[in-house]
Length: 165
Image (tube, rainbow, N blue to C red):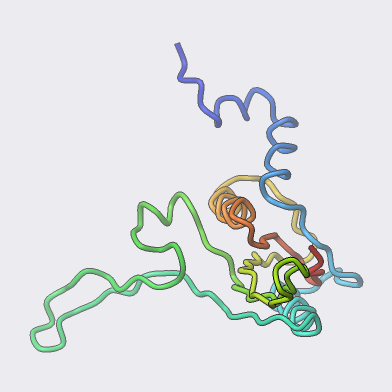
C-alpha cells in the first residue's frame, strides 16, 4: 500500500492541488507592462510600491558560507544567514522571502488609535512566472502561509504590490 502523502494526493489530483496551493500561497500580483522584464525589475517596482504605501522593506538573503578557523584554517560549521535558515534541514522545508516588510497599521479606535508595524514578507518572481508548487516554491509557499496564518502579510509578486488589508 502506498503512503497517502500530500505529494501522492497532488499527483492524483493536480488541479485540486494547484487550487489548494494558491489558497495557501497567495496569488501573485502582476506588474502592468512587465513583459520581458527581470526579477530585479519586479523587485524595484515592488519596493517603490512598498515605500509609496509608507512601509519599509529589507532584502533577505538566505544561504550558508563555509567557515574556517582564522588561526589554523580548520573547517568549522558553516555560517548560516537569512530568516528561517537555522539549519539545512529547516531550509529544505521552509524558505523565507526575498523582502521582509514592516507595514504601518493604525489600530481601531477601541485600541486607542496606536499604530503598529505588521510583519510582511514578499517573494519576488520574474514577470510571466506561474506557480507550480515544485522545488523551492513549496518551501516559499509554506513560509508565506505561516506569515499569513499568524496575522502577517505575505505573498508572491512579479512586480507591483498593494498593501491593503
